[in-house]
Length: 63
Image (cartoon, rainbow, N blue to C red; front, side, top):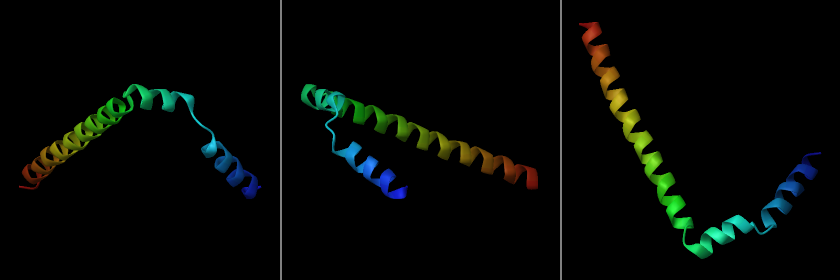
């Protein structure tokens, strides 16, 4: 059963994906990568600022 799952995943990874090939040939692949990177960076920055605000509120509450 596990063997079939692993082989299925292996065969799926070997197939050419037409959408990815089109994105690469059009140069849009890098745009997608940049959008994902910007969104991820934005989420990380938001979490750090939120953590800083929560930490300040906890310090005020403990005083």
